[in-house]
Image (tube, helix red, strand yellow):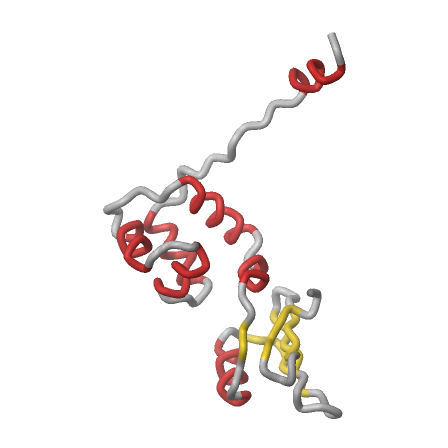
Length: 139
């Protein structure tokens, strides 16, 4: 028996159980991120109507979306990696950040184009690109 055949027998890969993810769970997850149906649909690459039908239990959530929901649930920082956020009104974003329970908001004393926001999840964000974009500081 060759090594390749032995490896095939020694490793068994099975899909995770996503059966707990239904329309009600989708709605709770979406709301925990503070997202509208339209915005969450954009992150998932589906229509707002699809989100509505899944949340109402009219349609079953398809397998690729189940996998994305599982990833978002267990790694919410993935959401921040998918989009670039541009801010044109600093006061607006500072007020919005406060509503998401930021532990700390630090304005750079040297340069008003950089701001750091620390959340209890230990995620930090910084303002870049001339002061109009927020990105995770670990990126």
